[in-house]
Image 1 (cartoon, one colour):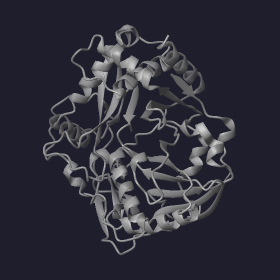
Image 2: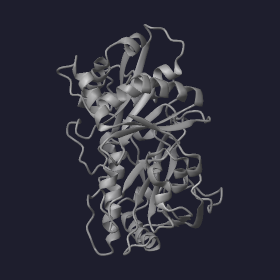
Image 3: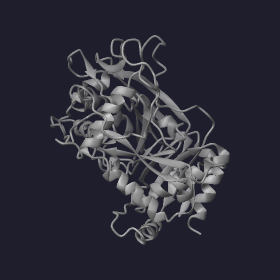
Image 4: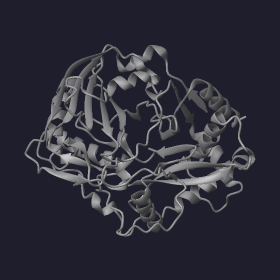
Length: 447
């Protein structure tokens, strides 16, 4: 079990930007407004990722840039909303995507480093990786709306390269992004090849019922009591900008095995997963790193993000391109969280996931229709374990590593495969003092 910290020398990757432009669909697309269900409305922020590739003599970085640009132009036809812009429907107070073909961002850059210079830092929440997935185009004037997604190809001295992607979360969830990337890769082969998956862009399948029927208490949302309808605006699920430390907390395969055994001791009938034990551990560490003074009988809530595609009736197809992830809250007292058996936390997380049924999901969508709330709890933990970004086959091969890029959201942790020894890692962002306590709690858990 280890924790890994950013290395100061790697916070600046010595990037030179060579091209910053817009890419448009290769053929004219229908001008329309895309309806966004309540899941999408609260996700108006960017998720940057970085995908690293070894040198390939047949595909030098400059050639990869050309191929990727052509592939983008092709794939933006079936994914026309990606090239659109957000707009507010003043009548409903809801966001929509104006599918106007305004384009996505495309950036070419180079680094003075080789991939070998970064070395094991590839698994760090390296602050320099922010330079690999820029979130705005400086070439655009302030009067021009920024694109909803930006793609960046950065070459390294060794001939290796990184593809950075910064996507507004409104566009898609993790599975939607994986499908988009598979389609993008399929179109980069340079010959007529069908899409890996034809996307289903109809988001009305996740619209609230009419009239809405809220059948469960939804403690995972905070009711904001903001106005709804004409003149209103969607709630913002964001956090204050503050100085944060970033660290990766890693569990080796042996750590995972030991935690699973610990969880199974008292929870014979609970399905114990790698995500479940990591989420329980993160929950414990986060809560007591931030809450020095707490009431033992007070409730602590963990929010887990659950894909509902296979939980709905009828099921949503894997081709659904939007967001099909809902938050689900699980709660225990602070006393249980601190002194209760670890198995109890893992069991709560497992049972919470089981509770995301067709009925519960539709009730949540209806609750958001009425109250316009945002997810609310002590911590949000989201799994990237099954996304498989590093399994996507490009003409130049698979990524050697794919990872989220650091961000300012201290109340969300992403759990992902570390890409090397079969372990899993979590990206944690906290103020310095809280990070020190979090790290101590994490280590103490194994002593």
